[in-house]
Image (cartoon, rainbow over all chains, first blue to last red; front, side, top):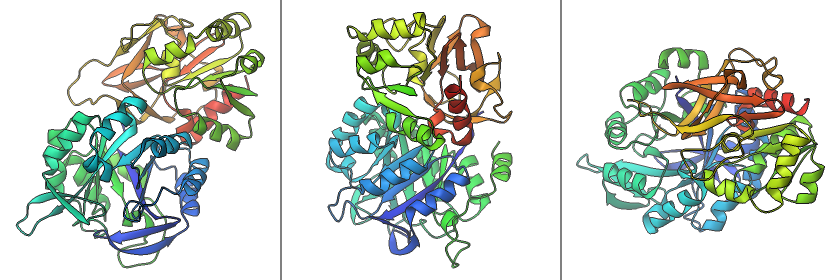
Length: 253
Length: 201
């Protein structure tokens, strides 16, 4: 049986690796290249990089850093952030990434998802959905690093993205991101129940049990880890690490 | 020297990155002159079966590839779609494949709880011993992304198998022709081991 993928989700601010809480207060973590070397040694399943300021700063992805990353990493790699045109997407693939992660452009130009999927295959297109609960507890889809509320319903939107050709969804809870308090399992479960493509649950992981819960109860196909893999513990210093793989594998099978 | 064939399908950079890391010289080329000189051929591929065959069937190119593989018998390794192209054909497309190994490429059966594509890390089990899988650790795992699977006629041509709803051929071989359904270039030390084996044939 297939191993559940456990994926460090690393946030870039151009050249720097950072970590946020609820998409705010980006704290400096370190140099991305040194960090990926450690994850390479640890033989992690897959890595995701998100440049969280590229779109809002109207900046292109930092291809130089991404190129260095792909030279170091012998695992599947995904990149998101500032991907608005076909040529830029193409350059991400040509330097050795096999997945692009699209968010803002899925709202401004939904047909772009289809175009990329038709050219590079559905498996190469990951749609990113950021979700925040409203004051009344309703899940709403946000974009542009939580700066814009699209008012879309995450389940409806996920189904639309699947129809458009997305091969995978990374579903992030803004309320949970960086908090170490566990996943929004209700959100994850209603999306995984609706779509037939894999869903990466992201936002809130703090313990091994959180990971197990989101896979078993939330039916996530893969789990994204942020704070857990860059900090020693909540409120403590930077330490690039990865949960005990044998224990994870034992508990997840 | 490994000749990585560029026929407009797939992620060639990452294959070359791994060879570079291993200290094995390689070139990426779509040039007929370079292909004619090739001592070892790596056939990568991501995308649709027919699109790939249309590119490979271009005049001059296909004849030369057939000659290298079947007459000169240089080692050829097809990766992912590149392995499926070695078969007679695929349920994904209409065009015949290269037909270097007696096998068919077929859909995964519809099985409850099994999502297609098969995407992620999976363990493999050994079938027929091969130079390609020599000394590979028992607990080897590889990264897969595919919606179709290969089914060999003769079990002797199956060198690794994997389970995903059904047991399928994860790596195949007939004489000098090899195929791997997974992506060795994205499979850490296990992939390195396999590519090193290929380079030392």
